Image 1 (cartoon, rainbow, N blue to C red):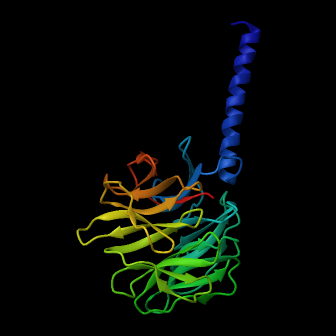
Image 2: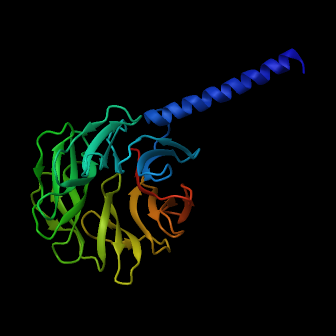
Image 3: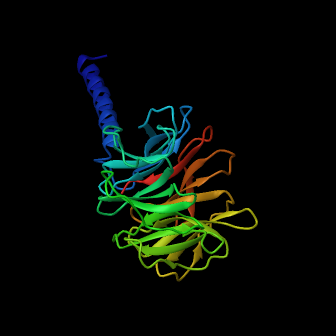
Length: 299
């Protein structure tokens, strides 16, 4: 081989390694990649429930937590630089935050009851979460630094799955206060709690569309089937997402509102899929060998 040709090949190989390194770093930092490219999720692929990042274009996985206890429920800060999540690392479930590269781990809630399912406020200053600390499920709000914690709901039937509206004014949540789990709305301070709509099934896992106009959610029917629905934020125009899979739930919107990610147990293990709502085309993101769940799309 001629010297110049050999040099050119070495340069090409070096550039390929550099690009891969930079891409991996961008994935860890959650920066420099197009919106909608990275999904955080929980997986048992290394033998324990830990938090991972997935580049959905390259299918590159990055493990963020390395703890013998269970880490679950990742959710992004509005600026995409931090994750809040649930961890059992202190003998009960509490809310933690960390940078998107896994550094700067901080415990947010400190209580003997279980705290889980965190959601950031749109301004990044607060976190809402579900707590089981008084013998029933309640929704609490806390500052992201762990201060100023207080209950937003106090209903013996049980409230859970809070999700903050993009404008920060409202929170949608699931509640058993009518007997069957239904979706309710309240102001961000907990006032004016009201039923969103009456759904002929158990409704849960709500997620606001990026423009705040619609709410995506899961249902569970008396026929033991899961289905996905979308409804306007005023409770009108209920529509089913036409995906024929009785095991789907945990839906989340993509940042552009054109796709959804969701969990399916159709193969016997938890797998994460992405579907194009307009074309009703779906694709598998995770492998079928281990459980993967709780997808959260980077803003």
